[in-house]
Length: 360
Ligand code: TYM
Image 1 (cartoon, rainbow, N blue to C red):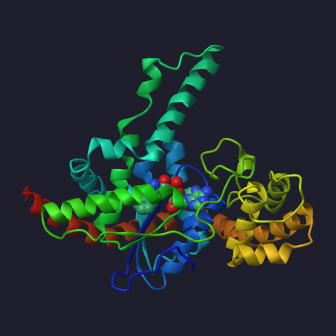
Image 2: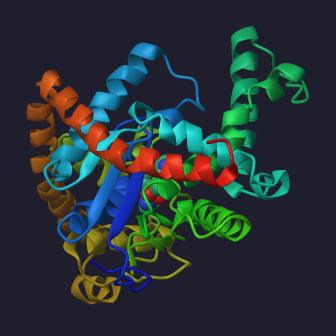
Image 3: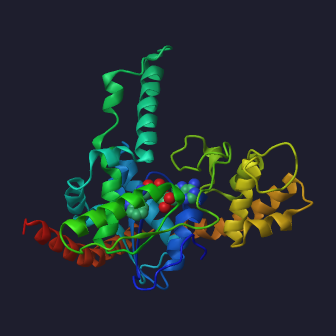
């Protein structure tokens, strides 16, 4: 596994999570999940479906229930082995919410407000909501300063990274495999751990990020300067792990490139560079090697080679997913036993924290 930092030897605990907001994209897979799978052989890993985090965006209860099982099954299909890791639903371990509240009280308003994801998401929530209101009432000129719109930016969205810090700190995780978009949240987790440790006494491990070198940020296929996101409303912007072979081929063929025809990795060519990144991440090679391999090929030849690679990697995951998803009871049992294992560690940390701050 290639990452941006060397892994310190002493701490062997890993934590990471993913929100059940939609079906997983190759961005999630290459940026995070692939590393989760690789780490499970040598580390003590805790992974969760971050259902509490997903409440920051409204979802129908039945959809959320379905998404949780879909995501759990998908991660098993990607290779997460419940005999090796504790893999659970975040809300089943109540200590996540308990520690989040304590950490809320140690986070300055200003530092939470500086989180760029909050700024982006609150702007999107606000304009998205105003657009919906406009569409429903067929309003052409939109007044974006209505109180109703502002109400849609909930406090959970603001406190989101603090719950994320609680997730990580509960397990004394030294390593957090994530994509580049989560780096700032990790900084906050580190600051909170250090602040708590210095105010009381050493309690939390200060976690390190594990960001993959090549796939730190996989970009959208239609707007290759933006991150590929599972919440994007354009299905052609992303490849999902449940996409059928022909859908994958079509999406890659449609991917935005440029008109000069040279296969190069450069900021001036975001479309081709993104496709090179996807190719290299699936093939576990350096981008420079992929560029050398593709020299002399046309964009269309490159896209067809890439499509074959992506199809061959995703097809077994999709097929395994379908098989696992059919057995709801098995998924539920795995989730429950994962939560039991996680709770053993989480409750110890929580007791320690309550004792240190003086409420126990
Ligand atoms: P989420 O659900 O948005 O994404 C899950 C993981 O996928 C990575 N990722 C990407 N990596 C590369 N390219 C992309 N286009 C791309 N899109 C997503 C994300 O960086 C992430 O690692 N806040 C987290 C969930 C979370 C968490 C945690 C993570 C909750 N608690 C504690 C780590 C530790 C999130 O929204 O992930």
